[in-house]
Image (cartoon, rainbow, N blue to C red; front, side, top):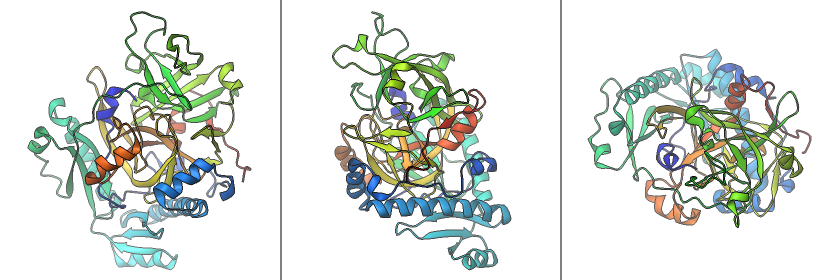
Length: 448
């Protein structure tokens, strides 16, 4: 996770629980919802890695069966909400799973509510439709983008909170943040103050699913440091090439449109770390507002097993990926990463936007989802799953400079706990297809 990500990708859930309930319609066009079967199969409970089972109990208080069941119900709700919104575009106001796992559909009038109730869903009346909140988000994002950098820098993210029919604006608790004047054209804004903009990330190459990269050859004596990130989902293209999907900002040459080699770190002799591939395509911002990269892997990586449909967790354990999914507020998630291994949480907002700044000071809009799984510096690019389905990759978090998750949870408890920004996998695949034909996440749908 690069230093600038510690500030730029800080994400804060609106409050504890699922207050930042956000829109369930596909964020990047309705066509993406058909990229997967309605109900991808998942692994049975007894096939989950022991380290993941430990994380589920520790972080969520769930058994493997409860986790898989709730993840599956979240995807069923996602599909229902997308169809329901298409039929009721002016009165649909959102949908989510409650902390108890109940599916809720919000509407703006009682008549539409009766339709959802007849289908067996709990309903809630809301004063503003999903379309109305999305329009307000566009206005607010345009206002933020128009501000000078020194003014907009304390604003870390904006989320749609459908549960309370408002936008949640996360601002760093700094003098500049306190002086911000919100635009009067948007009345439904809640301001949440978070800790300052993060701090420097200590680059500590570790084992596991780590990779390092740099702007120059590792043997170059002028090289001042390396970037440390995590591999995400193994993938392939229509030619059968071995690929891996990670974070775009992990490419140290992304600002100039270049590539860079990727290495597995030799912690005793960094300059002689073995090369396992290079960045083939990287995006930060752009028309789709994403943060992802595609790494083309070499034979050494393939021989190490990176042509298989799995992600690595703690102590060498692996999880087989059986399909892909979309963010649903209230859905349980677990993430892998080189620094924090398996940690679990819930999707707290499935529509978050943040303005990020590159090293050259260029503003980039990044769109993703927020979740409460602890994420540390170096976890960027790591896989996020719901059940055994690929959900997204880690872009950044509000705990990037914490030494461990225990301390992060303690220090951030007054601000609602840890929160991470994830980039959803299906929009990544749709966007990357323009550069890499036939790109798809490696899955084993028959593993269960």
